[in-house]
Structure formats: C-alpha cells, structure tokens
Length: 212
Image (cartoon, rainbow, N blue to C red; front, side, top):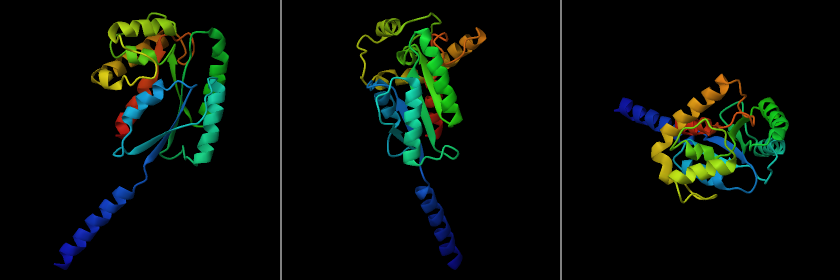
C-alpha cells in the first residue's frame, strides 16, 4: 500500500511541475497604428497555449525606430531571448527603394539583439492573398489589396479575416515558401523592396503552431 501512495505522490508532483512550467513570452512589435496584424495574431491567443503574446508599445513606422523601441521593451519586460522567450519585429517594406537602407540597418540591429525580423513586401495583405492565390508579379500595396478583394470582396484594414481564411492556412505557408525560394533564386535579398512579392509571416505562424 505504501508503494502505491508513493507512486501517486510522484505522479502528482510531476503534474504540479508541468502546470507550473513557465510559459514562453512572445513579444511582437508592429508598425504604426494599423491594427490589422494585431487582430490577426490575436486568433492564436488563448489561455491554453504554451506561450503568452504581448505587443510592444508605440506607433513607429520607421523600421529602425521600431527595432530600437522593441529593444527597450525587451529590457523593461526582462525577457530572456537566449532561453525560451522570443521577440519579433514585423513591418512592411512598401515599394520605395529608398527604404532599403533603413531596413538593412534595422535588420542588422535586430540580429545583434537576437530579435527576429518578419517582413512583407510590399504589405501584409500579401500573406492573406497567398491563402487564395500564388503570384510572382511585382505589386504595390494597392495592387495586392485589389487582387485580394477578388477572392475576399469584403476585405478592409483592421478586420478579423482569420476565421474566413484559416482553412487555407497550410496552402498559404507552402505558397509563401515557394515565393521566397523564387526570390532567392533570382538573387533578391529577402526583406528588401526588390524581393517583391514576398512575405515572411509564415515563419512566425509555423513557430506558433509548433509551440501549440
């Protein structure tokens, strides 16, 4: 009988340790006052996940200032990016070549501080479009949204599109990877204005799915 009680205590202790295991902290910096991305990522949040998502404060649209703001937020929150915490800086490249220099500086600063940069060229709506269609055609942001509306007519900024496109999520991931491969094969650096169209959103999505 004593042996049985001891085993029950051991199992109970294991469960307690599992329950008390610290959740990973995922800190995301988003550009400007646009809430499109925040609304989208909120669909991956619930109390049952092994992680907690929070968002850096501020409304910067400059990629470099966005990274600098994120570094301060990491320090304030005491995140350990060498352990199980992760920080993402997510922004659009748009389509103006003059933005390349500032993007390169932002990416370098992010790399120096273990921050993961996620870019979309020209805009995040490309990620939504890839749920329906694959294209290598160069596009401005207005072109992407126009093309997206052919498949999803009611699209507007700051709406929760996730429930309507989730069934195509894995198709979007595969198309994004295919598009990235295409850009690399054509000697275009990911994250630059020239790597258009391209989106790295799939990387954070795969991470969140894996973390579960």
